[in-house]
Every structure is written in structure tokens, then in C-alpha cells.
Length: 330
Image (tube, rainbow, N blue to C red; front, side, top):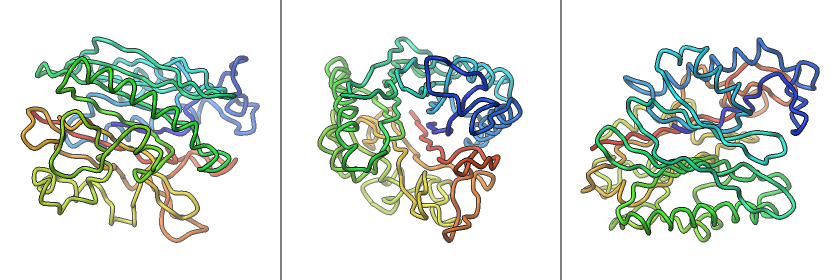
């Protein structure tokens, strides 16, 4: 599971970061009550997003620090699961990071690293990399990211995302050099669409189509739109149409801006994980959406993700993004 949880900050100011708006005295009037409510709402979303048991691996972005993760994993209903976590220490000016939560009974990390993205004149969130082993002794290479924003316009900020894509590609190539049949999963808020030319040429992603090559990266955010494609029979017969809610209330993405849905949160996987004859493969990929995650728009027709804030007004929702999920099976 990957989820941009929209500014999960504690209430205390960090003198080294620009986080003053998320304090009781700040412009957002961020209080302990609001923080606790947000953590409980996130926990509810995590628990509800899976059919039987909560996800064994969860990545969250826009998380401030350890105190947020301690509260989320130990003082909400998630505490009964026994999750452990890791959070990056990014140079981002606002102090937001990427965190990974995992169930130690189902997934065992063997290496966790973070990589800074070299961007001229500014800073952004570090990339989180984790290599680990599941219950079936399959090695997974997980890359979680929150790419530079589109502030200032998509075209003018493209060079920053290009730098991030190149860093992820470099990391992916090093993994392929170690493991020819690598199980690479890249999940993140790309601040970009699956059709992005920058992503295609810098990260070298492909749109899934047969034949599948094990050493290529495929953006499977396209798969929900390909559920009738005969080349993906094992996905076509899955539960995608029941879970994804693309038609329910007009949901067509993970984020909505000025009435337009976009798939900014994406999953990219190595070919070894989507080839029909692979031992370990992705059998489902979907955007999770529950009724309490949506709010009817006042300015545009339809619904949007129920965010915590709408501008500077506190609305009490969870996040301005919807989470994405993948399911793997041997």
C-alpha cells in the first residue's frame, strides 16, 4: 500500500524546518485533537483497504517525524498488528518524509537505505529503498518516493522530477545488475501522470503489453484501464472491477484538482512481477476508496478526496489523495 496522507505533522515546532503552520499557534491552528483524529482516520483507512488482513507493507508520504509514526503504530487500532516502521530524514524544507510500515511476521527487511535527490537550488524528499524477504523467501526490492512538486508549473518543474527519475533508474539498474530476475516495486506520489514523457525517457518505463521482459520497468497504473485486455488474463479475472471504484461516484484517479482527476500515485514494477508465468507476481492493482474518503465538491460536479484542510479551513478529512494497493501471490 502507498498513501500520501497530506501533512501528517505533530504539533511541535521544529526550528530547523518550515513547519510553523502546523502548530497550535500557526495558520492551520493544528492541535493535538486534530493530530489524533487524523492518525485514527489513517489507521482506519489502512485497516479497511484490504480484504482480510491489513497490508503487510505500507508506505506513507508527507509524514513529519518519528513521533507521528510512534503514535500511528502504537496509539491507534494499528497497535494490535505489531507493525514496525522506518522513516527517512530528508532535507525537505518543510520537514516531510517517507515512512515505511511493515508487519515483521510477514516481511523481513535485510537492507534499508535512503537516497537524496540532487536538485540545484532546492531540496526535496529522499527516496526510501528497502530490500527484504517475504514468508515464501522471495526477495523484494522496494522503492518508495515522493517526487518534487509541480509548483511553478508542470513544465518549469519537470527538470526536478527528471533528476528524481534518473536517481530511481540508477538504483533500479544496480538492482538488476545484482539480480537478473529482480522483483522491483516502485510506489510513490510522482506529481506526474503515467503518460509523462519525462517519466518514460528518464525512468524508461513501459506501458504493459506482451511480451513482458523481466529486466524492464512497467507502469502498472495503466492496468485498471486494461482489465479487458486478453494479454492480462490473470488480472482480467481478478477483483479489480469490484475494488477500484473507477465508476462509483466518478473516481478516475488518486487526486483531484479543479474538478479533474489524475493518477499521481502510481506503481511501477519490474517485468518479472507481471509476466503471467512468473512464480511471484502482482495479481491485483487498484485504488482504494471508501465512502468516508470522499467529499462532494461545492465548486465542481462530483466528489474529491476528503482532505484535512480545504485551503486554510479545517474540514476534518483524512487526505487529499486516495491510497493505491497491489496484491502479490506465489
